Image 1: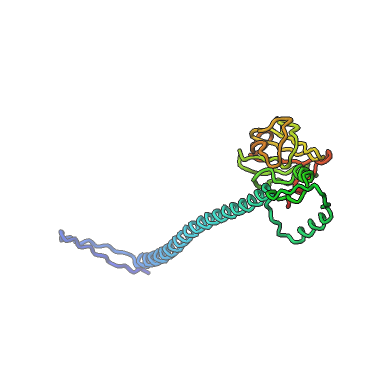
Image 2: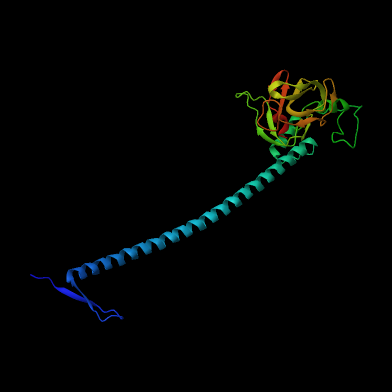
Length: 266
């Protein structure tokens, strides 16, 4: 059976010659199918491309929003860190100047009970209306001054006392050059370098207590000096084996290390 043909004529404008082509009808059918397939594929491609562009646009928007949230979160963390630092600094200064106000009623009652019968009348009590301990005798004042009860530096407690780990003191993170205070009155037993501890000052409080201050940037006292409670004995540094500026503070009682936080919690 002969196939069906179509005749295609091409008539140029500038010529009288007419060109004729015979095309098998099957080719027209193939061309129609190919055109339909092309249109479908092109439509699917255009749809997926539009969808992809939308996803990319959404991702970029989310990326920008995420960056803004991270920035805000960092700002909040910095603000909270500053607030914490101010709160800690306030407590440190209150301890240094002995103006700390205790809000824990249970602790207040405990202190009152422990000291209820401490005071004994004495005819030679020295009254000093400008002193916070105005109703204590001079001898009692000296005893109190020799107990290392104040914070040695205005900084953040970065590492606690841990006898199991061999950390026999408290580390205070502070700005290099910040003043370091004697936590109690006494005599300087040592003022110099102690290898890993770096520049160190040791104060004998002449009551069984000894306090040490290590990793100092500089030392402002000498061996044999009498120092008063609250006196600046050096500055915060990173001498010795350290990873940054901080003060390593220890208290020894009758030759045995004790946790300094016992004295600085209130």
